[in-house]
Length: 312
Image 1 (cartoon, rainbow, N blue to C red):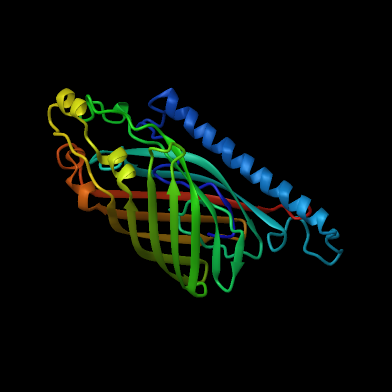
Image 2 (cartoon, one colour):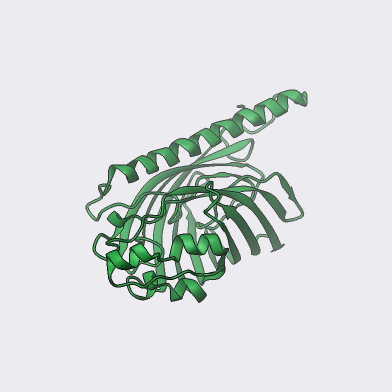
């Protein structure tokens, strides 16, 4: 979105759930709660910084004619979200799991409200003439044998990580056509860089907002080998895959779409879906060719409630 702190869903931002609705492993449950805690911390920190900056600049409290605290037309707007979605068990998997989680976001009331469901957690430090730039972060939960015990037998785990980075966003046609680029790197020096590019065509029909656009993802050599590489031990233990050392380059190409409906200024719902096709060395990986699929689908539904933090 480029104008506020946002804890986003993403296949890398929460733990997977079993069909009955319970988490498959305590490790994954901990990641969900940790993610919510980090998001809440960022939320509170932003509010604190905003108040501090206002104080340092000598700004006075809102005048009596300002909108009431309950209005979402002023100050900061917080949004509580509940999301449920279906996505691949691991990047390159052919099996899917259902995922549900809460999240929270924060934006300025004068910021553009629309953002894509697959945007990373971001905060704009510069915003003018439709252009935004700032820090961004994403959760990468990695790949664990418990995700798919039969297919991933003997395959090394890819540990979860946080991917901080930078984003740039430009509305070429205000409120209608947006382009966005995120460049991130995992906290471990061996994680490598990943870049996600997106373009969205946004149409508004009264209370409904429809968006669709292409997606393109790249990874450097370290990232690709972490996600799609197969070492000799993997090959000997699994038996179905051969050693493979991918190079950096394009990772996937696809499309994402969403439909948002605003029931009121406070309540809204968004249904979304996406398709990515793994390409180049990602598609050539034995993990994908022998154990998974290059075709990656995901879909979900989010219910949101927004309220004002005016006066904090």
